[in-house]
Every structure is written in structure tokens, then in C-alpha cells.
Image: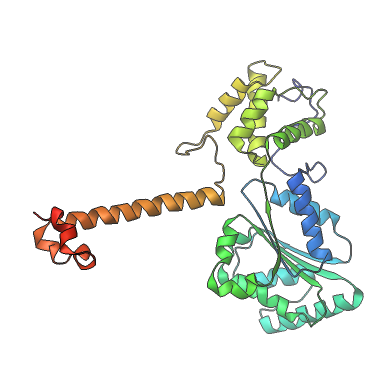
Length: 330
């Protein structure tokens, strides 16, 4: 609709990832290098986390496209499965048989690892959205690594998910798994300069003749509202171009971006757009609610101390001397 108006060959901010036009920010380049290193260095377990919409799936696609022929890949991007479904999926992807018998599957999987070792090949299991995995399935994944014979080191397991994955992994039952993780990496969102580069990259790959379709103030506002989240940058950019076309404005200014953000605001959201809170922000919220809970408990205890009928059950009376509490007694 607006592509011809802005001199574009296609929509620049399509939400569907295009492996042929992947923008690699500094943090994405580092993330891809670490994923490749996790395979080459024969690290068994690697954990990659990223906030919602930060491009982890795009990064995984870039990794898959760069794999050599000697890597047997099993990519699971919907891990909400029962145990038998999980083993069935792995068997199908790796060319193994599955008849519902876990013992036979483990034997075949162990033989595959041995054959790969003899041929100089590798097996890579990637679990995307791993933060939704139940503890028992994470334990099953860990036990797969026990099938490697000493010195083989052909199996790599990448757990990829939102920061909640770290909380899931903190379960005491997963201590053996945590001790096996050789690499951890968190994919950061774009800073302002990376947001500018990303928008220009998207316009360029869409065939833009010039890159000043978005003003500097508009880009700064997009970064502020999206907090550098690529998916939200795409949503705002696409809506702003549509609005600019409707209002016959060849340059997208801050006013158009602000209008687009208002249109996209979801009722009930505190932020202008649904941006993921960082772990630090979540920790602050827990601290605030924890402090409010303590304050509420103290107020209740003080009020109970003022009522003669329930004073004898007061916790404060057991903890503090009478002289400290006499001003509360009537």
C-alpha cells in the first residue's frame, strides 16, 4: 500500500524473519560467534537467553544456515510436549526409530553418538523457548548427555529461551544440569545507534533510494518506546509508514511516530508498548512488594497490640519488653 509512495520494493518492517536479510548488531554477532564456539569447542550444554522480540529465533536461523554437513541437527521450537512426544520428535529428526520404548531409543541414540564420533561428525540439539520446559523434561535432556562414552564429546545441547529460563534452572533438582553448563550468554536489545542502523538496514534492503524517510527525532522516539526490541521497532515502523502514507507525509517525524505508538498502545499496559521487563526491573518489583508486605504485617501487629482482648496473643509482647509497648496499651 505505502511501498510505492516511499519508493520501496517491499515492506521494510515485515515481522516474519528473512534469513537472506538479517541485521547483525554487535550483540547478535557476539551471540552467533558464541553459538558457533559452543559447537566447535565441544561444550555439551549452552544457555542463551533473550527478552521477547529481541531476535533469538533469527539468530538461531543464522546459526542453522551456517552449519556444516557434518552436524546432525535437531531443532525443537515448541517444547510443550510430554516425555514420549519429546523422544518421538528427536527420533524423527535424527532418523532413529521410535515405538514408544524409551530403553530402545536410548540404545539407538547411544549408537548414533558412537557412529558420529567414528566419522568425525557432531549432534546438535537446540531447544528454543526452553523457559517453558518442565523440570522433569529438563532432567531428561540432561540424562541424554550421559549416553556419550568418555572422550567422545560429539553431543551439544543448546537451551534457548527468555530470561525466565534462568529462574527455571535454579530449581534444586536441576543442580546437576547447572553444573554442566559450559557457556551462558544473554542477547541484549539495541541501543540508540543500533536502532538507527537497524532501521536504515531495513529500508536499504527494501530498496529505499534514500534513508532519511525517518527523521532523527522519530528514530529516537522509536527506540525509547521499543527499548531497542527489534520486533517492536518493526511494528512501530510499519504503522508509522502506513500513517504517513495516509496523511501524505513523505518524511516520518516524531509526531507520526507518537501517533502510531498511541494507536498501538494496549489497554491496561503501563508502558506505551508491551516491552519485556528486565530481570533487574523484576527484582525491584519483588523488592517493592516484599517491602509492602513487611510494612503491612508490622501495622497489623501494632493494631493488635492496641486491642486488650487480643493483646495476650500478641507476637510483639513475646518479642519486646512491656516498657517498649506501654504507649500502645490503652
